[in-house]
Image 1 (spheres, rainbow, N blue to C red):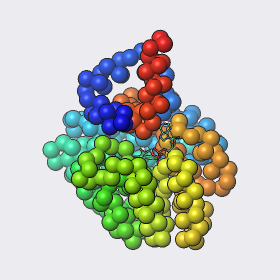
Image 2: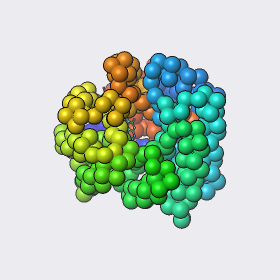
Image 3: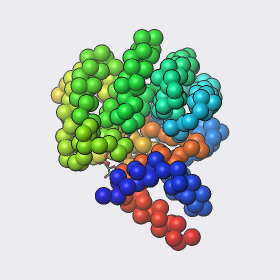
Length: 307
Ligand code: FDA
């Protein structure tokens, strides 16, 4: 029952101020968000890729309120891509972006987000890599999919995320699989109403398997975004049945969660991509990680009390 409460707090400015100011927060945050600046993150990129992992980079931030913040978000990604150029890692390090950080919720937001994300996709392509559009709450998805389709006209490798908890996703998966897209499938991390989303873990897991089968049997490139050991075994089985080779799909997990499993899958020859977030506006991302596992919240609260 704690998850929905934490997700509600993730949208509260008062909680944001309280939690961000707590002196011990940083140590707990570091587990999931290992740096604040591009200078912090570049050595971590080197270390993780050196261990055989691939990465998708997220400059944390979402729900911005001015066009200037959207431009700053675009520039933060461009700065990172510029630094990646010298590392020559190509598709081993791609970008994940949240369109709400690029202005999607502002007046004229659809066009603004497209205008801000396009240069990031272009810059990524120029260094031989790609961008994946994260999925946020369900009200943003029609715009996200339209932007994805628009970007794919020039950059067919642009990916997007679909969320198994939404009723709409089975239809989205069929459309995307037929169009040959790169698609990351996740369970879904936002607080969604019963009118649009399964609320029960078992139902979500069953939907995940159905959708993954569609992606595996389709023409696109499935990206399995989950830490769930059962779903990872199911994914391996579905890939085998669909006749996919090891480089025709990939696993993705979040930095700081089941890190041994990242290395184990990579050592088995799987393509394993770690979603690595950095930056200062970490509140929303951090709160979703707490909501996914209440033990994280207990650890966080204990560390506050013991100081
Ligand atoms: P589940 O929650 O059942 O977890 C399985 C096991 O993993 C747990 O038992 C635990 O051991 C471990 N675990 C999971 N979460 C943990 C946590 N926070 N802390 C510690 N251990 C944890 N969502 C979204 O709505 N839009 C998006 O764009 C993305 N993008 C994205 C990218 C990638 C690469 C991943 C892996 C996930 C996302 N998500 C996301 C988040 C996703 O929707 C989901 O909330 C989390 O992945 C947790 O679900 P699992 O599939 O891991 O299963």
